[in-house]
Length: 200
Image (spheres, rainbow, N blue to C red):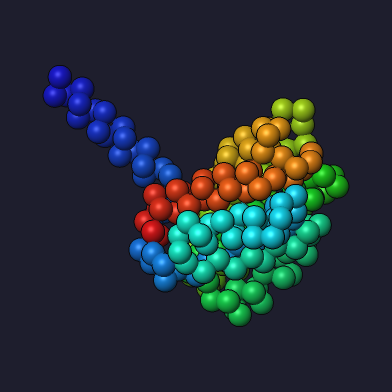
């Protein structure tokens, strides 16, 4: 019985170790930069129903909504460095790439742009929570390059969560956006991910 219990504890520890790097505890003093496109801006929901606003309520900290509807990663790559410099965030939430996928931008280009954003954050010692965007398929699954980038840059990753939310009709306002309930659920997932990593 004891060896089996010890093995279980080892497995649980290994799973926890694989969930991403730990973050320094900041609690309500944290400043979070939520960067992305319309899914960050909150298209499909009302005022203060976007996920950054809901996340701010959950954590009691400052969450800056830097979402720009329609943005592709090439434009996000240009926009991010100045925002990082101006806002000096403790954490960056990066949710971008959906518009590239919808427009058929080559995956190599998407990955290169996302990688540069991760490098810009790393240069300023800002940890990143990267959120995978689903591929354009009948059954939504996360694009594989997000996990590869997170592994390469030792970033926190939410891989399946957005695909699952966008696969649930009751959580969507249209084919590509969440509704208020969907953004609330996304904020819950992000909060628990950051809490598990030690930020809260």
